[in-house]
Amino acid sequence: KVLCALSGGVDSAVVAVLIHKAIGDQLQCVFVNNGLLRKGEAEKVVNLFTKHFKINLDYVEATDRFLNMLEGVSDPEQKRKIIGNEFIYLFEEEAKKLGQVDYLAQGTLYPDVIESVSTKGPSAVIKSHHN
Image: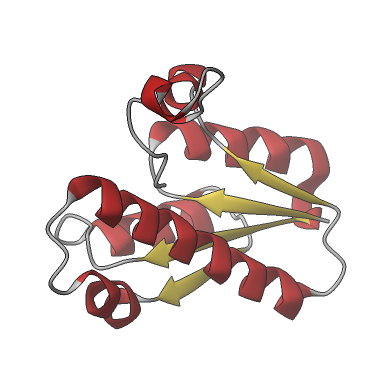
């Protein structure tokens, strides 16, 4: 079984569709509404993946959870870390609900990895990865 973190962006969408073509219903996507999406975006993502692609999708409404954690935080780097950590916690919770999960899939461009992972100390990081 594969758990796919679906943001609705191109990268994770392509990953989800390709994996679904390969393993069918063994794929379980999770889409989290963190309250920071464009108006109507969550509904569009859910409809596209469940109705058009026929992919198993769990929709997690976490707007209050994210916005409460970000309240009063103005530093962009701190916000990225809060958001990134909260996504990790949410996906861990979803994986536990599913039981046996063999793999986690996500769509991340290599430049995002380069700018958010340091190989030469903290000063080499451009910004934290947050989605």
